[in-house]
Amino acid sequence: MPYDINETHDPNLKSWVESANAPGTEFPIQNLPFVQFESLETFLADDGETRVPEHYSAGVRIGDHLLDLQRCVEEGLFKDELFDALGTPFLDSMESILDADAEAWSMLRAGIVNILRKDGAVFRGNAGAKSKIILPIADCRLLPIFKKIPNYTDFYASIHHASTVGAMFRPDNALLPNYKWVPIGYHGRASSIVPSGSTITRPRGQTKADDAPAPTFGPSKLLDYELEVGFFVGRGNELGTPIHIGEAEDHILGLCLVNDWSARDFQKWEYQPLGPFLAKNFATSVSPYLVTMEALAPFRVPAYPRPAGDPAPLPHLYSERDQKLGGIDITLEVFLASKEMRERGIAPIRLSRGSFKDMYWTIAQLLTHHASNGCNMQPGDLLASGTISGPTPDSRGCLLELTWDGPGKPRKPIELPTGEKRTFLEDGDEVIMRGYCEREGFRRIGFGECRGIIAPSRA
Image (cartoon, rainbow, N blue to C red; front, side):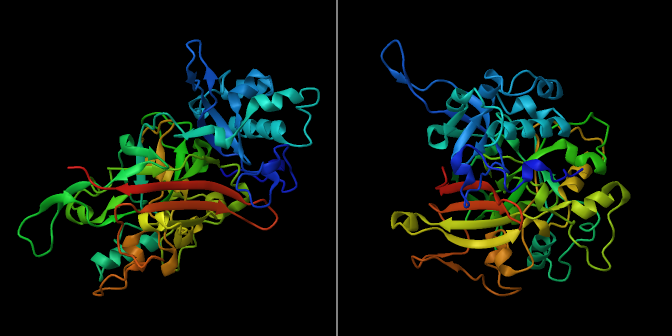
């Protein structure tokens, strides 16, 4: 069930990490997203060579610093009850907390706040520990949030996206009859998930022009991005045992940004009858920050209001609490910078702005549905929302939608400040996704960025 608002969300709470108190920061003490990182500190080895020590760590972002959780353990800054709840004496990697429950995760958040709060008692007589437990973000390299993601599932949870795309290919039957009854998804490829900042090689595959007698093989000409929000499963479930809708969020550790890159020309040729395959599995970018469900408590909203005539969710996908607070108001933006723009020092342009609250299905419903047949979810599994699009043209979450001007009309290209035009992505283009939550009476919190640059295909 969704977390309640508590003292960790107090907008007046300050940190001794002064950059976390700046009005414009995405990472105040009220946020504390998890990260996995390695320090870039160097040392002089016995052989006279300068080296970077191996230090792969779990932490949280606070202002322009990272808090190293294992160093907090070594300094004795957490209470013993926390480790009993987590079931581990270590916090040396994100994997160490995955299989805990929501109560333990909440205890960990409270413990981190107590360490970082300006008015806390942790550092009375122990001020020397400060320099040992935090590192400037500039001295660290952010790593994938988990060393290995066991499974990846992508959904299709935006009714605005599904309706617009459906209208392109089925003008008389845009939304298939199952959409309002069952969350639609497919199993993606976990091995091709890459961290933010990774280069995305233009994929090669089969396409077939409408008037061609046979398909051809070559680089995708209709390469696209998809703006998505992902969430990571913490505690799993046994094979054969479903997850109840009222308990689904107890299995979700937090949310991140996801770019599910798509080759639209491959997709058109291959998706029937079994759905996405090579059009999707060549790369999926994931942001490095995991914003916890508890941090998002002030930004919960009702589930998407279903229009009159739409069916209510079936009983196994319905709970009053989820209907009341199942939505999350996350503002999401996509920016684009071509190679020429970067070379000329021109800032990225914003392509779209939308909100995660416009999703037809809640994240609890997505997880519940996934496990409803007894599928065993595993700690570290990634589930993504599918393209997030809103009701207006400027809130569409992919180029397939943004450049569509209606049935039978040619695509309307996006014009860049350099005079370049885009209907789909070109080599050298960089896509940047950002997300944040804000609400009067609370501190704004951010998700950071999810980035990727398109590189030419390889023969």
